[in-house]
Image (cartoon, rainbow, N blue to C red; front, side):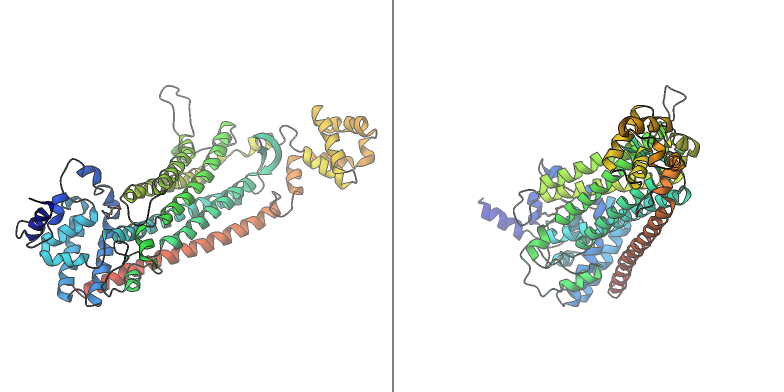
Length: 498
Ligand code: ARG
């Protein structure tokens, strides 16, 4: 038998198909073989099972509205899809992926007419639509966890606007600050993480459906209508771009990786603070040792810190998979998707855990106050004071550096004034002002420049943080409502056929 006649034979087969009463059998030729499980994404596609059903529904409704598929056939297909949903992903017939398996299940239920569901589309635009559909929910959940974390940080800041703590650069005592100022530093960074996710969302939320294999279709489809039924903001215009591009996956994975990097810094700070008894983590966010009974370890935050590795791995895996892929569709794309799922799961969980750990931690105000002046951390304030009294800042810096070497207290400053400047300290500056500058709390209160740690500067920052959180929360709620509304509209449309 020549290849040609073998193919004809398969095409001509009638009644021999497991997929219905006529036709649709050529796939059988490719359904076995040792690479079957390697080829199949069916298990991983559980994640997009619901999404695929919705995409199938929207596509079928659009086909019926356009007169491409008869209303009664659309009704049968839509009824079958509902039954398939009830049975669940686990009951799907074997298939190369969820798209094929659902189509097979539809045909098993209603016969060959079920094959009309796949008119004017390909699995290429279908899978791209399913990924975008599902990813929207996942990104909104990630956004929600960033907001929860920001709210925890604001709560900490509200409670600790006057809790003085040591601030570090190079992990060396640098200048006293407050717990509120520290918390709001992360609130700002996580706020930008929220924004990056929301921006990525806008580019995910476009419909590739109708791109078909890549080259469009001869059928008079209405892409905008299918997009609307699925709650997409519009369509990815070019059909080749629609079916083959995955930069939306890369963008969101990168945004998640950036957030994971922010989280890792936050986690590291808290691990260090726990080590110094600045903070007590709740038992819920700690572990003990199997051998050392006294241990209370900040394991949750260590794991949060580690998730930056998972996320960077996701970006790397995805970038490497996508790099150099020719247009249009290539099967490599099947393995691209899982990097994004793994990253969004790991980072969302880490963000949620970080929010809980921060919200439930106790700050040890006494320890923090006692340590706030460690390492002559008020030195910069003293140099500022001298500069404010007319000494060039560089000269003041030198004098205070000299004092630092000799203990960094009032006496050391006095000695340094005589040694470096040949003058008594009192002739340069009011001694009471020096005493005040040496006090960590007064030092913090004096740094009231915009964004600084002084309580009144922190009040402004808190207000801005609350405002941006409520803006982002409003955006999140709008986006969630839009998805819900689209879901309900589609259900109503479907109900018109079933
Ligand atoms: N399961 C595939 C994916 O995840 C979609 C199938 C497209 N397959 C194909 N041979 N064109 O990308």
